[in-house]
Length: 368
Image (tube, rainbow, N blue to C red; front, side):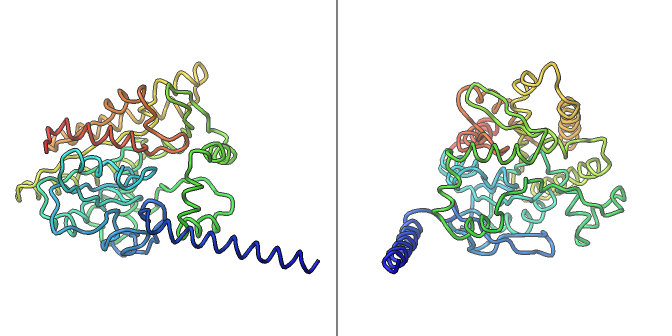
């Protein structure tokens, strides 16, 4: 019994030593920003931000190696521009930077929206002396994010019209409950080894089962390049233009983008809006085919409301002369050739972000 305990102790100590050594080696050869979750901190104006240098982020708390003295292009946005589901070198701003041979600073963070963008434009982007600013506007929840920040922080009350006077916030963070959430969160912030294992494609099956287990309206859709998990209730939650708060969010969004556009024009900076679509809209044909002839009201109404919202948004941008890039056609054209989204998440993968970067480059006629 004594020998067994001794051997077990030696085995545990050896295992821990190997893991720690492996973690140390990986931190020298891999970029921590691609594997470690950063630490968020509260902010009186933006509601939240990433701590400086946390999880491999730069001094400003954004997903870049460093803060440059100047940047030809600044990309502002939320998680779709940050590059969730891809390494930092494979976000669309990073792809665009390589295509053009120019610095493209990634000034984005998940959970941010149009009001955040206007603040980042004024307080951060302009100091980088860019010639162009590209705002990644995610149609899926940016209007809700604009409403939430405006009505949760007195700092932004100037954008309120009174529609949301109750100060009730729309819930945007709709992630599913996770087993052992606290343990997994700690490991995600501190262990590259854990992140490599948990993010591998081998765990797609586990993630699919986990999400389907918590939601009875989730279903799988077969595409030419693999299956995708669709959660219509969550995906279409923030695109219903008949909802007063989304109407208010649209007004706020158009107002702040117009202010940004006019201010930048006075300084000779070009501002363009990249309209990033919902994954469900990219795979609309496949989704409707998969659920036909008994598609739920959530699916049918969701697509109908989404079309109304897209039309209202683009009309508002056109009326104000704000240039925008519609990325939906490019993503739809690319979906048959390669998997541009992971199976269980609405963010593009590296191939999807490359499609976005290429579409931005081509539609803006950018060159190196």
